[in-house]
Every structure is written in C-alpha cells, then in structure tokens.
Amino acid sequence: MIMCVVRMRMMPMTIHRFGRSRSTFPVTFPPSFSFLQTSSFHTWSYTNILIFTLSTLTFLNILDVIAAKILGKLFPKRIPSRAPDRPFTKFEIFFINFNRLFTVWFNSLLIKETSTDPFISWSYDSMSTTKGLLDVGIGFFVLFFVDDALYYIWHRSLHYGFLYRLIHKHHHKNISPGALTDDAYNANPIEFIVTAFFFLGSINLLKLVLPSLHVISVVAFASVNATLAAINHSRIDMDLGSWIYSSKNHDEHHGRGHGNYAQFLKIIDVFGGTRVEWSGDEGKNR
Ligand SMILES: [Zn+2]
Ligand SMILES: [Zn+2]
Image (cartoon, rainbow, N blue to C red; front, top):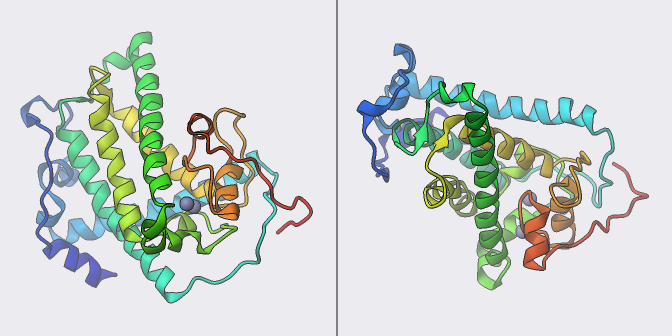
C-alpha cells in the first residue's frame, strides 16, 4: 500500500481550478493541518501523505461500523439474499483497494477545492439565523439531487452495449451484495473515478442556481452519500419512504441487472420510467 502511495505522490497531477482568492478564505486550519489547504497532494511530505491516507482509510472503515451497527439496529429488518456469500477474487480485491486509494487522493482534492472556491461559504455567523440554517438544508438537498441525477444518466449509460461489457459488468458480478463499503467500492476504477468527479461537477452546477453553498452542506452530503452507498450494498432493509430512499432499490438493481439506476432517490427513476419494485424471494434469508 505504501508503494502505491509513493507512486501517487510522484505522479504529475493537474488540478482544475474554478477561480478563487485565498485571501478571502475566512478559516485558518491549525498549523499541523495547514498543508490541506495550502498545497496539493503531490507536493505534501511523506509524513503528511501517510497521516492523511491512514485517517481517510480509517474513516472509511468507521463508516462500515456506523452503517452496520447503528443503522442496522435502527432498521432491524434484513433484505433476503438471492445468492450465497462468495469471497472476493484477487482482481476484485485489487479494484477495491485501488478505489480506496483514489478516494484518499480525491478527498484531498475536495478539501482543497472547498477551501479555496469563493462559492463555498465557511462563514459560521450565518448559521445563527434561521435563513442561514435553511440555506444549509437547501444546499444539501439540491446537491444531493443534482449529484444523483448525474449519476442516474451515467449509470443508465453504463448499461448499454460495450460500456456495460467493458466497465460496468464488473460491479454486477455480485447479485446480492452485502459487504457494505467493500461491495460499493468493487467497481471498475473508470466507473468509480467518473462517479466521484460528479461531486465536483454538481457543486459547479449549483453555481447556476444558488448564490453560495455552505461547507456544512458539502460535508453532510459527502457523509450521507458514503453511508448510503454502503447501505445500498448491505442486507439492511432501510426504507425512508416511497418517493425518497430504500436500500431495496439498489439491491433490486443488482438482482435484475437493470432498472433503479439512481443511487439513492426513487423519484429520479419514477421520472425516468425505470423504477422497478422489489421482487426478491421473501422466503430466503441470509
Ligand atoms: Zn448497474
Ligand atoms: Zn451496486
């Protein structure tokens, strides 16, 4: 793993910038973490890369604990499995770990972009007003919707012809995923990387409709997105309502191999005419 990190550090990287002025950034990171906002990943010291990599990977593992323990207790029903468990192949383990390491680098990019983009507000004064709190909520929901709508178009495209055979077929090897983040990360890196960049793309699309986006909306979106992606690949039956979210939707997508292309929001599939109901065998339980 350390070899991979070292190789990533040596890779020349071009980071697209969206216009910013660091002098307007109102929050100063503590000195020990200032490298997060003042330089790019490939210019960090080996120590900083190691600290950031280990913290990010630990956070991803904690997500599994949150998803499995807390949400698993809040939603005690389990989705019946359509297939027995199987171990990951070496190829799958390579993809999962590659995507985890990419996530480490992508998180560093996200922190730098949100730290320096004037569109992202870091003002905590506004949080003391009702309007400020409302803006955070609106920013979260619009970001959540736009990102899932982009994912819907991308995922639906991945189910056509050569795109499916070359890229997406790998993620569909498992018809009853239950390994949480590991199964969520078990995708062709091309699919994984494009999907991740929808995050930054969505933030930029929001510039068309919102005057600013609070960093809390961004952090909340990132956390909810990562947690629900893990729940989508668990046996936890989490249902938040007929128009919002159900973990059975993505499970049904894996079971049938089509339909329910949105990652989270049922309503997007309803409008896209691709909504399919759960059809698993209720008699079989894992
Ligand atoms: Zn699919
Ligand atoms: Zn999946």
